Image 1 (cartoon, rainbow, N blue to C red):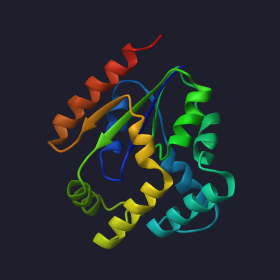
Image 2: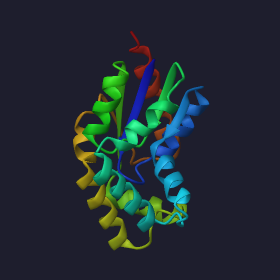
Image 3: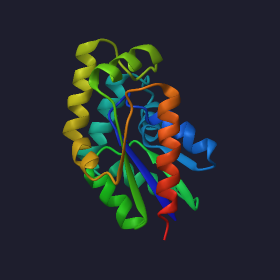
Length: 180
């Protein structure tokens, strides 16, 4: 199995990358969906605060790799993209189970990410600038910077959407060619 795992801060372009991957015929799994599903299962509204609380509580209770562990049973396709890895521990979980792993980092500046998140109106994006920076600090505390440091490839997403989609397609094609 070839597994591509993305890592990037909120608003960096991971959702767009998922769209490109799907257009190429890759199966996808968004790790954030696992957290949002758990939030709903507990009868809570899918807000930034609730999703963050559930994500943190589960990590505190079950360890930093809990969301990767919960993703494993859902990974069954030959070639697949998992979106939204948040720590080096999660990368380790995936590497242990799928040796053929490509970690893809997506970078966008805080200013660019904040603008994107302000315009996309996703219920768990939060509101103002303070919430944005609080979310960044929380993600960094979970270890996203360490996961980012393990990236096998990187896309800088500061240009147009078309530029990003072209770069994403090129990077995904390159990662898939590295198959053993």
